[in-house]
Length: 367
Image (spheres, one colour):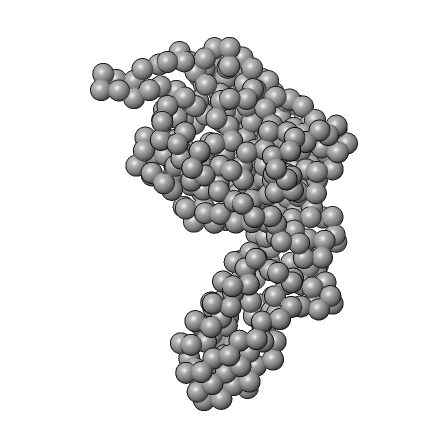
């Protein structure tokens, strides 16, 4: 029997799949004595990027129980990989969109803006990292196919691991991330039309192992184009978070990004006003004017027939820009910065927003 070794190995978590290796079919034959153990560990693929960390964690876990530890690193067979992908999909068919399932409880949030340059992607990344730091299981889908920037903003330089036809998204700051930027070399532009765009975002939902998430944040491209419409159809339960600036003209454009969500069935979750003011010793300086966020919230309340809240105002922060350039979200690199404090406060608001349960099975039965 190998009870002591298996108990130790159950504490080793695969860094990509975020599950114990003992539950993933990664543990092979074990030879155990009172003082020594030899174990075979099966990686998902040849050249697995997590191989060194897995071997280290396995060795350290076993060394707490045995004086002599030997670890043999090998690779799964094709049949073992297929069995793993079936398990990860929860016996669902390939090309299955888990977030469209009526029983899925993940809160899907579209982060949208009417135009570029309002800080939408930077805020999306920081909100995702803030939610993860608050104990939430978070995924981040970079749906801005033409203007992808999430990999740089969150600091991921590796591509997803491919197991059979299933992609394992890279993880940074406990956030699972997928982006077209992982598949484009040397910053090449993406020149696709509607059908290709639809296929790409669909694959990001069906061919990626997202696992059990509390939140999926989707960084939409600015405007009201093909991707927003496609995702509105693929993720009908999503809610839209609209990013604007205080400037009146920016607010007028931002209304459209919320309105397109209403046309494809998404509720408006709220509005965030970015670059709201510059803090100073003499009080806030409203460089870009004022009232844009309130105007967008009021207009979307009128269009939707439901109250839309201005959830927060992010101050102008040089450190926020620097942290983005340094690929380190400010909620991690400088959590005391006023912008980071406000972003974290908004993340807590998102956690407190009601989770839609209409039509979902609560998986309980009367006693």
